[in-house]
Length: 417
Image 1 (cartoon, helix red, strand yellow):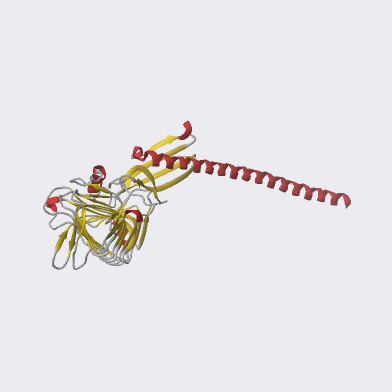
Image 2 (image 1 turned 120 degrees about the vertical axis):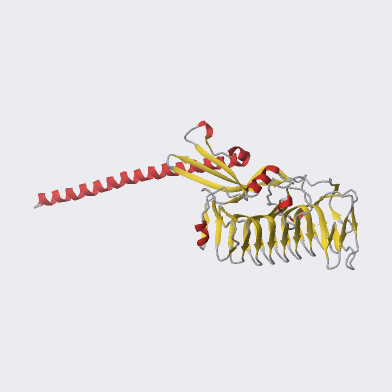
């Protein structure tokens, strides 16, 4: 009995030792595998950081997707691509080792050129700029040689700073600094749907399209469309041959809209880039958050009415508002901004800029001519109860090389994925 018991104990001990040894071997294997995985992940992270820096430094070189080896090694490969997204650029970086891959998607924009940044650029039409009421102007201004003067309008005199302009005054030219022609052509081409239409998107309550994949588009053709109770986010483009209406119940994030006429109903909040050929109407108390864009691209004789961006009272636009006129005609584009509205960013009016009472622009204004309309009188090149302050732009504000006043240096605007 003792011998049989001893044999039994030996078997149990041997089994325990074998299980222990197997566990130690397995733990060592998984530890080594985890360590190798962490090492590969750290390498991937370092490589993708290098890829991001390459895109920031030379993004335009990667309009066609490229695969390059870092440090002269095929084991440290990255894939780089850049494409335009409205007035900004989208950069995509992949780093990969065997089957392990990391990807980063981000939008880029340009830094402000302090030597070119101005509160006002008003072209020289041989007449002065007049100010009245509580108008406040701070920053460098480019104004006609006729200068700037105080005026008495609507029973009110100028009551602002005695210097009128708190900053440097310089002479403007007969024409505005031009918008970037290549980007303008890309935006004009944007009205043509070059993609496969995915109208099933509009049947869903919520759609998020990855910037890693191809653009997903909805083309409404000649059917007027109202967007309500819907969320659209990411690489989505909406097209129309007529009118698109965006209600306050729609949530749009980073998408593009191209249509002849765009209506944004009162109370809307979102981030988007809206481009029209005839008109953009933004209702009261709307918020288009940074980096949004309102772009009016008038097409001369093709416009049946005066091309117009109309922003109603109390709305806030964070980003860029611009108008351009591709062909000379008597239908001059107009940007009209309602009372108590706040613009944080840039306005570029290739035509008329109508500012109502108590409009604030924290950034920069380029225009051919200011206008002010009362019930009885139309004033030109008058600023009445207007606040234009270039110094109140956020120090983190990034713009686009599409409009004047930026450097060639690019930085990350948004991390998208």
